Length: 201
Image (cartoon, rainbow, N blue to C red; front, side, top):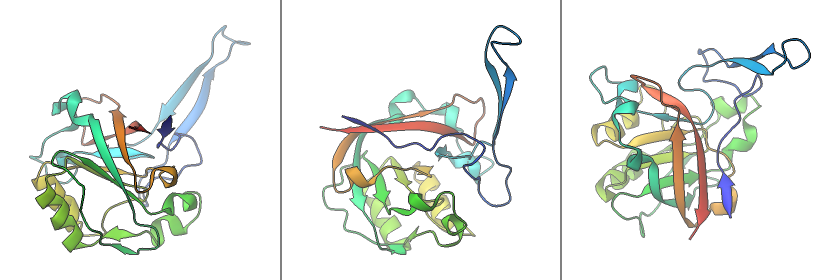
């Protein structure tokens, strides 16, 4: 069974405070033009998306410089529900793993507290993940850290990509899954919205 871990791109899902939200408009209809078509506009970090090092380092690697193999692999989903600052054991995490943190926070996606009360990763846990040699960190919250974003820089320094605004992780909490992250192929991208899906072994 596969689980869709992605938020939709629509006019309701908010973007990070200070950035424009998405707009989805009907451009043509079968009734008027003979076909349906939509005009879609969004920033590269809208809804469920993946950050590349270039997001915060002008000389950092861009998303389209990674091979597709980077986005397919095994993911360990850790249960971090109830933690405002996430610090967990890294037992069972293998080198090259993706690690997803299930905080349950995505239930607030359409509420103001989604951004104001989001859980974050502790510096100590971040360092343990780096030492474990993970490839990607993701969570069902807007960011692994707050300004000035030291953990973003730490992860990027070690070529660890960041997936933000995941959803539907609760059924997978505590499980090891196969995962595919499919970011839009935006040229010279600092990040991109992505479809993320995962299933049990």
